[in-house]
Amino acid sequence: MRKLILLAFLLPSLFYAQKPIFTTAKVKAASVYFNAADLSETASVNLPVGTSEIVIKNVANYLNENTIQIGTPSSVTVLSVQFTTNYISEFEVDETNPAIKKVRDSITFVQKEIKRIQILTNSTSQTVALLDANQTVAGSNSGLNVTELMKLVDYYKTKRTELNNAITDLNEKEENYNKKLKLLNDKLELNTQKEEKSSSGKLILQVMNEIAGTVLLDISYITNTASWAPFYDLRA
Image (cartoon, rainbow, N blue to C red; front, side):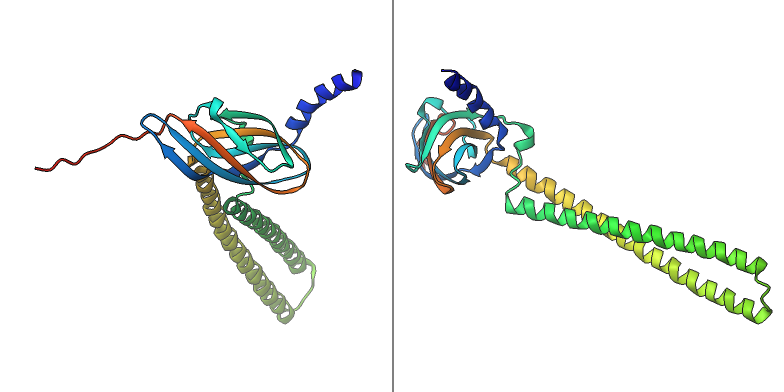
C-alpha cells in the first residue's frame, strides 16, 4: 500500500519534470455545418520510452472538449487530454523549429565573433600603450645619436600606424557584426511571432509510450467557431 501511495505522488512530478514535446497539428479533413465544423487533423511527434507531455499547437481557438478524440498506435497510451489557449511562457516558442534554430545558431556564432574582435582590439590597444611608454623611456634615456634616434622614431611611427589601422579595422568589423546581430535578433523575433500567429488553441497530452520513435497522432474534434451559410447571387 505504501508503494502504491508513493507512486501516486511521484507520477505527477514525473510529468512536470520533463520538458514538453511540441508538435503542430495539420488539418487533414473538415466537415462544415451551419453552426459548427468537425475537424480531422494529424500531428507527428518523436517520443522516448516512458511518460511524456505533448503540446499540440495550431488547433482551433475554441472547441468542444467532450468531442476530442486522439488516435495513437497500440504502443502509445493517452493518459489525459487537456485543451487550453494559454501555456507556460518559457515553453511557447518551439526551439526545434528549423527556422528558429538556424537563426539562434547564427546569433551564437556572431556573438562569439564580436567577443573575439573585442579581445583583439583590447590587446592591440594595450600594445599601442606599451609602445608609447617604451618610446618615451627610450627617447629620454637611450643616449642615441641623431641617426639612430630617427630610425627609432620611424619604427615607432610605422608600428603605431600599423596598430592603429588594425584597431580601426577591428572596430569596423565589430560594427558590422553588431548590425548582423541586430538583423538576426529581428529575424528571430519575426519567426517567433510567426509561431505565435497560428491558432492559439493547444492540446496538452500526457502519454505513456512503449517504443521510442516517431508517432503519428490522429486528432478530431468539433468547433463552433466555423460554420457554413448559403449565399445566392441573384441577378436580374
